Image (cartoon, rainbow, N blue to C red; front, side):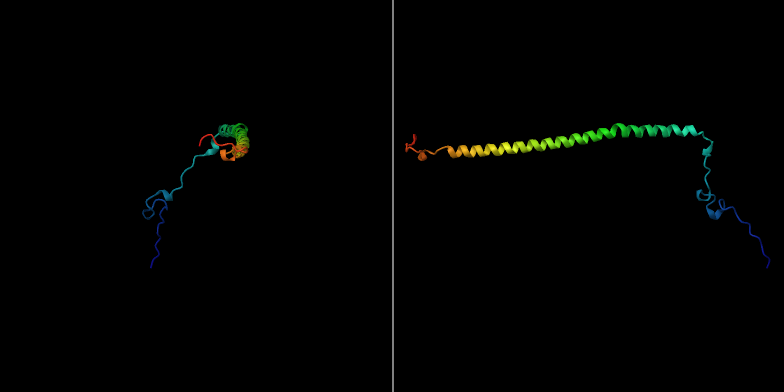
Length: 116
């Protein structure tokens, strides 16, 4: 038996490998080292300025709105307590006035009622 040499096929182009499909290839990436350093820094500078605006302007506005909401809530609660107190006071006065009204048969001097 003679040993025969088997020619090895290129792994990316053989028939059993899908005929040079995407899996067998390594894509060529562009060389990013050729770009100057300043071209990318303007984008980072823009993002940095945008974040600074968010934290310097918008965050304090949200904080002021929160504090204003809490103050308004406290004032509304105080107003409701005042209204409840006044309502109770009016009910007490109404009860007191109702007790002081005499029914005709309760007159202290024994006067007869006007309407029989």
